[in-house]
Length: 430
Image (cartoon, rainbow, N blue to C red):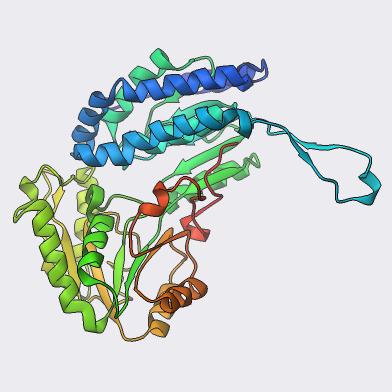
C-alpha cells in the first residue's frame, strides 16, 4: 500500500474476474454500439482530464508537457478515433474464396470474435499510453478487461483509478492496483489473453503463469536497441535524432537508443555534435531545465548509477552528474566502451546513459549486433541505399528506422512488436 495509491484486496481481484466472466457471456461487451460508446467515453476520459494527466505525469516522472502529450495523451486519443472510424469494417464477417475443390459450392466465413476476459498489465514509463492504448483495442474487439496499473507511477495510476468508473462501464472493465504480491495473485487466474508491457525478467514470470492455463499472451519487452552510425552519415542530423531517441523521457523508453555503434572516423565529430544538441535543448545545466524528465524512483537511480560506476571500460565525456534526492541523472555519454563491458553492455540501460562503441567495417558492426539477442528496435544512419539493405538483410530486430529514431512506433499502419527476448506477437487484443 502506498500513501498515494490504494491497493486492491485479493477478494476484490477474485470478485472482479468472476463478475467479468459472467458479464462477457451475456453478450453486452460485444455489441457494436456498446463498444463505440465505450471508446467515446475512453476518449473523453483522457481529453476532458488532460491537464490532470499532465500534473500526474509531472509528479511521477517530471515529464515535460510536450513529451506527455506526444508520448502519453495523443496515442490514446488517436487509438480511440481510429477504432471509432473503422470498427464497422473491422468487425465485418469476411467471406473467403474457397481453395478446395470439395468445397466449391459452399461458403466459408471468417468471423472476428472477442477473446473474452483479458488482462492488461501496464507499465510505468508511459503509464497512460501503455495502459489505455491496449485497453482501447480490447474494448474495440468486444472484450471484458482487467487493467492492472503500474504502482511505480502512483499519481497517474490513482488518477486513472478515480476516473475509470466515472467514464467507463464498470460492469465490463475493472482496474486492479497493487505491487508484486497483487500481480502474483492476479496471474493465478485464467484469462483469455494477457497483454504485458515491461522488462524481460517479469515477462518470463508472466509467460510462465500464462502457460499453466495455456493463455495466449502478448509481450512488449525491450532490449539493447542499437543506433548504427556509418561513415557517410549526416553527423549533426544524426546527433539530433539520437539525442531524441536516447534522452526522451530521460531514456526510459523501451524502443530508446541503448547504445551507439559508430564508424571510428566519425566519433569525434559525433560527440561534439551531441554536445551542441544537448546544450541547445537543455542548457548548460539540464537539472534546471523544465524540458528534461526525471528517473521514476530512487531505486532506479541507484540501478542506473551502478551501471555507470561499475563499468570496466569507457570515459564519461558528457554529463555524469547524479542527484538521487531529485531522481536526476544528467544526459551522459560514455566513449571508448568495450562491447563486452559487463556493466554497460549486458542489460538494457533504460536511462540517460549512452555508451558509444566504434567499428571499422560494416561486416564488423553486423557481427557485433548479432552477438546480442534481437532488439526491439534498430536505428541506422546512412545516406547509402546499399548500406541500408546490407544492414537490414543481415540483422534481426522488432522494427527499424533509417535516419531517425522512435518514429516507427508512431506509424499506426504497420505492426509493432519484438523478436525473441524483445517480445512476442505484434500488438493486438482481438
